[in-house]
Length: 151
Image 1 (cartoon, rainbow, N blue to C red):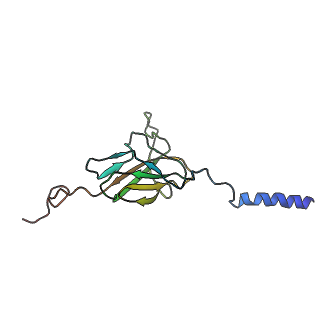
Image 2: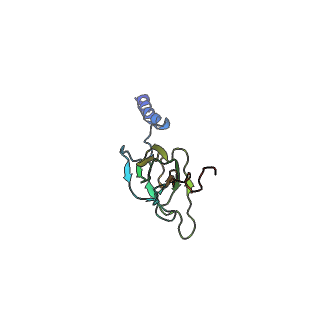
């Protein structure tokens, strides 16, 4: 009977050593949370979820966001920044921000309406996204009005 008890205890312990333990706490919703905050430039070529000094977007482990960007077309450039604090630049200067890497901000979809991202880590972050499109063509052959035709 002692051997049977020992075997039963061993069988209960093995899964925890093999990675069968509960994973990190994560949001489990499949539907992304729609985020309509942020600022889009008047010409609709630049979008940011928040200013550098404003509150960053709450981005806990497993969260999926659909960021409604308001750009005039699908973004051609996208940058994501993360912090461990909602206000990473406090008055005492001890905050910091870094560009995301790896699975911290997975880009699931980008289109002419939204940017869908997911935090695929076990860490709670605060997010800042910046997106842009081509500059508006002013009709003079270039976005800056310099023209491109030869004399």
